[in-house]
Length: 163
Image 1 (cartoon, rainbow, N blue to C red):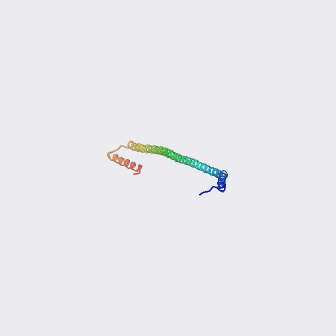
Image 2: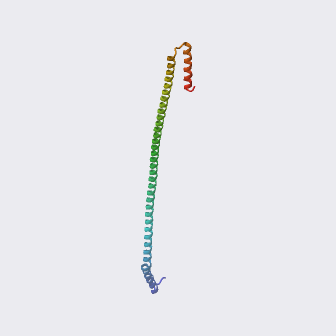
Image 3: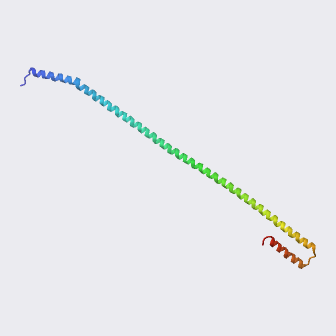
């Protein structure tokens, strides 16, 4: 059987004292260090999560800005295209006005030339008629003279027109 002796009692007391001392001086500081490290890890994870959410927000903001820049670029391009189309239409209108002015000037010049040629032809006709009248008044004409005068008149008219 088991006998209780004093050595066993002192061993149990020693183990209990050792347990209390280890608990007070070893276990609690180690647990405090572990708790502190756990807190640091939790804080680091929270900071990382915050940084991640801030980065996601910054990425979203950058993408929004990029979309806005694309939209703005498209709007500017459209505005420039509209401006170019307006300028093109204005240039076409100006060119049409210039062409119309040149055409009107040409028509005016052609009409003036026509009037000048008509006046020249009228002057030649008048000169021929005057010459014929002078010849008729200077002599008494017969049918032969009349035919000869008509031939002369036609010949002079053909020579005056360049024919």
